[in-house]
Length: 469
Image 1: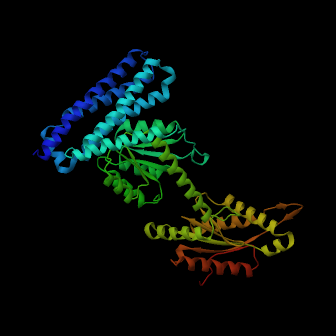
Image 2: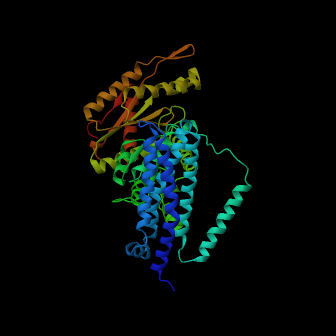
Image 3: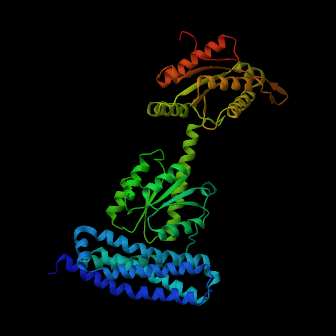
């Protein structure tokens, strides 16, 4: 009876015999096409990358079967070996498909035929590698694979031809995608395929680079390689899920086809999984689906957190923003201020001009607040005619100046509604973190008491900290 190492060696010897001839044929096809082209043709680099992939895969399979590889396989390294074989195979298939997609009109019929044959051989290589690694020691597993392949072919033959072109909705056309892979060829293949659909792509060669990009760019989807040096895909995924972009969709990309590995990716928070070599149709379908779900969820979240009339934060969103301000104060000692504003005599506007006029006034009042404040200041509607603003890194003097600009800007507004001109003023109350930290509800309550004081003191004024408080 053969030992496990002998079984592995025998499987790798068989793999070499089955792989080297197709690789030689693919490389010959690429060389023949290159010989027909001008020296400066753009396609030459891609043809050379296919040949380089053939050379790398040949070296890898030629190295299989020695004692070190057999020992690694026995020790549980079969998945890593298969992953290493998939990277050059991904280059072979990926660049061959890209050449057919981008340069078909520029090639001779014979060159196109050579490329199509190379693609077929590449797909055969995928099957050969999967067959070899399925279970070298189990004839039953081999028979099962053959039966499954026959069943798949029969199923495909029974299906009518369908249009596999996927439509890209306008909502996701501007989405930015981050591709994380330590293999430059894998990066480029994914980039070029996605670029054809108009997606903007950012590239990262390792986990630390990926996290830096996420902190700087507006990323909507991450394609994340699983096996990378220093920081593997699981570790990067964990960082994403524990950070401020925890809901970001992540698709793991790997040559590992072990169901346990796929299950682990999904259990650790990945949204989906892509196997190398990446099939373009599957890539497109999974990327588009992930982006559509993400943008839909983001839009629902925006609706849930936005006041529909004024399009600023609603009360729920304001409370969340206030809690974040408190956290930043506790962690970084960043001082902040809260201003509660109310439109004076707003009920009189509704009673005199109607609720449509009242809605118009609320919208114009909101625009006035935006025009006076900074982009990163917090503005929201608490309810009715009451609004809350929050400012970070603002001194007492600066805050008083801001409040006066707000008050004067509202006083100077001239609101023309139908045949009427409406004039309004605002009153407010202020709380500042330098007064001592309070629960968020207490901060707002204190600002509200000062707002009431401003109202009783004559309106059209903003009340700050009173002496003796």
